[in-house]
Image 1: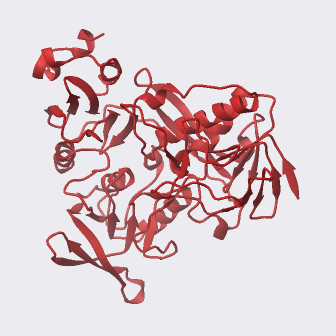
Image 2: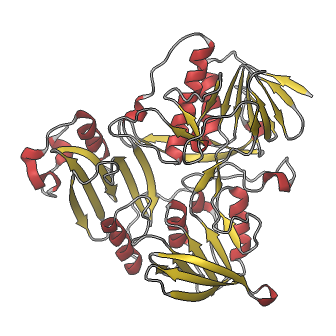
Image 3: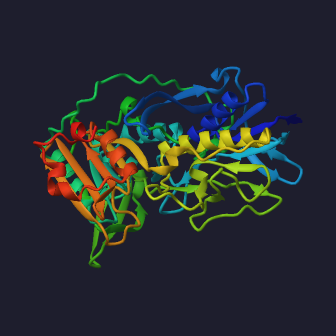
Length: 472
């Protein structure tokens, strides 16, 4: 069996669908095929500007049959790339000839045990893994969360009717995104259980469709969850009360060993703390939320160039080292000289940006034209929600790659807002806005324009001064 297309996009996640949609806009008459391992694909919806170049959005799940007529879809898994012949082979034996190929195969969860099928350890990655989490929670009273990023923080906050043991390797929570000060702000809010959420409560409609592929072929390879995944999921355990329970946090700790208890009664976990001491606890199961590895579970006739983190190396046009082969999203690593205010993080925001950029680059290449890199790669920006608070991260928000040559200004109002400015030589290099996102556009302009803020001193964050109006 064989097929042929001009543009072949592999991956049904945000990066892959964004790439296919971008191609459909740039080349509406071209043949575009989206190859997805799952019949569920993810697309961006409700795109709302937070600042001039920064957006927040929802992620919609769709069946591949509902993607419309702008491009074709095929549910199968990539097995081998023959770049010299411009064709691929799928697991089902389908040969697809292409003119341009984009790899958006995403990532697979990092599980500390390395065993993806271990019944005591699950990784949260896609819709299937969330359903498994729900089934396990239905009979669970104690859950251990391992990790300190976005998903781990969301679970620690959202789980209810269950005792949560949260094991983090750092000295503060949510270290992937926030500094110790912001972590303390969140910690106080959790303890007082009165964090305000000013965002409107709206139901996010999600549909669940049957998988086309056999179950064993889809495990751990579905498209990544969207930024709002927990809002429509019942995350209740088996303890009575209907309440959120404060997680017990184990700082600077790691799992030393896990032992099955008799009669499927859960796990005996041995923790090792930084000071060399050990502690034992029992739990029904472990959620491993320690990030993802780039998913490159396929072969190629010519070696792809990989970066040190395992991602496929791409240039500013999202091109790999192979002719007419592009990559975008979690599977790739940016090797171009980064702009002053941008760096790569494997986030939904950048998956959308990279996918769209790859689509534009492929379309331009097909018509012998050249394009400039999108301006979104000039400034790092991410919008999310942590512990019930809206969060905006801009530029070098934690002083990334600035060494010690910077200063920090902070304004904190208990249970309301935490605002941090990172300044270098009097210029704003990054900002963290928690609870107050109205300053996002002002901060974006201050960073990009390089305005000298030294004359204003600490008054730049004086609550009696409306800097949004002042720098308008």
